[in-house]
Structure formats: C-alpha cells, structure tokens
Image: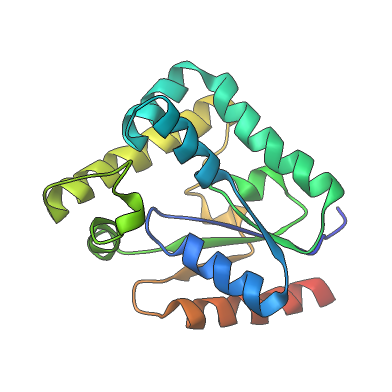
Length: 186
C-alpha cells in the first residue's frame, strides 16, 4: 500500500484529537478533515445529544457508513491533511495512523469544562460526564464492530499510540510529527 501524506488521528473521547489536529495543521501547513464535526452537526439537526444520536445511528448504519465513506473519498483526491475521525485509520489505511489515549478521569474533566461541547453534551457534574463518556465509548465500539467488523480499541491498528493524560497538546503534536517523518521516510 502506498503511503500518503495523511495523518489520521483517532482516540478516546476528550483525548485531545481536535486540539492536536489543529496544532499539526499549523505546524505542517496541512488541511484538516473532521468526521466528528459532521456527526455533531447531524445530532444537533435531530435535536439530540451525541449519545442519543449514537444510539439512533446504531439503528441507521447508513449514516455511519456515509460519514466514513466521505473521509475515504476525500483522501482519494487530497493529500497533505490531517483526518480527525474515530475510524480515520480504517477509512484511510494509507495514512499514518495515530491513537490518542487518555485517563477517563482526565477526559471527563476536559469534556466537562469544554464550552464547545455544551450544545450536545450538557451534564450537571463531572461524574455524569464520565458515565456518559464510558457509555458512548462502549456504544461506538459495538457499532463499529457490527457495521465494519473492526475493533478500534485494538492498538495494533495504529502506527503510534500516545497517552495524552500528562502531556501538553504541543508535546503530543511534536511526537506525532517526529514519528510521522520517520514513517514517511521508511
């Protein structure tokens, strides 16, 4: 398989995918493609929170397939971009595949205090946020296994796995760039 100048960022909820993607775009001069933004837009249009919409999509796999297909189609005609998508590694296998992990307690705090999430994730406590994140992770993994036959929690799917719990987004981006350059050269 021919390598493309594409970095696919997948990972745990609130692991820093969006922030790290933005930094990579800035540092590399790449563009970004985000499946999550499209998913949240669809949830909002249906007047659903992201967890409820995830359950809805489970019964309507054509929505999920269209979201992933759009990423694969974009990669056919574009190069030099970062794909921020849960299944970016699957949709664009010729990309440099990165998975960002994060401790669930750290993730819940990040998500709870992220104002950009409030229109589709609005919880009274960090503990409620954490419980919802655990549920979403399980629902997504089940959905991806049923629709695509893949297990995104299998770390062998990725070229690089980083735990972001104790690193700044810039440190994470720098490590990705370092490893990406090695991958491109080999």
